[in-house]
Image 1: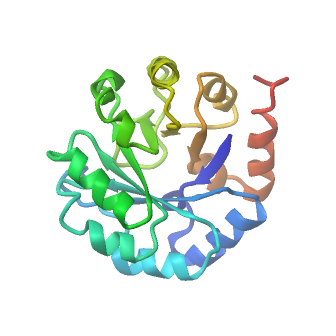
Image 2: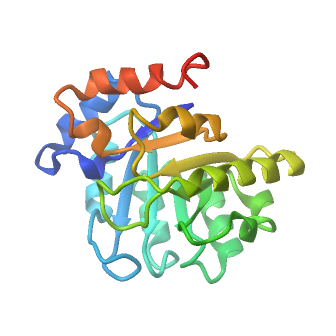
Image 3: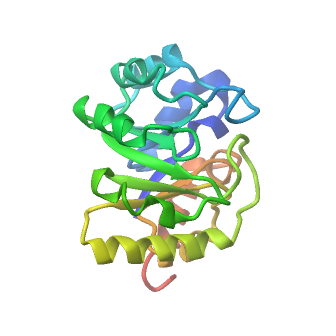
Length: 220
């Protein structure tokens, strides 16, 4: 299991401090949400912020584009320091083309599916993916409650990947905390995005350690 704290849930007046917390806590990635006010109703980080984040951490940046036209600024986001780029299946008219552009730039390519989108829609795209992001909340806002049916989606997706024998990771984002993280890992998820359950606590570094402890085999 790899842990990717979501910087959107941190104190946005002290992003550098939040990145330092991620590093001290042993995060594997930093999850960065980009929202455009169209695909989702909220607004968040733009390219200048991503550049600033990239300059202030050694951790890989896991970029999640919750935008209506992911192809429009894709090259700029890649150049700003994204290590992995996720586009939404629901927003990508020409998904193959986007995935090719991401990989050609040297980044890992991922696709996200909203809670109501079946993972089976990705069957033909799997050979061109490095990972799939299963949304366990409806995208757009931090701090939402986990949707349990995401666990079954992860299990179905895991089976698809096993049958295809492809090296595709499963990532999950939304409402994951100390009470459900063991179930998420047991469902086959490889990369776990956690926001409020880390940054809203009194000791985020200790919380990250506890989350890892709860994913150990004896806890699952």
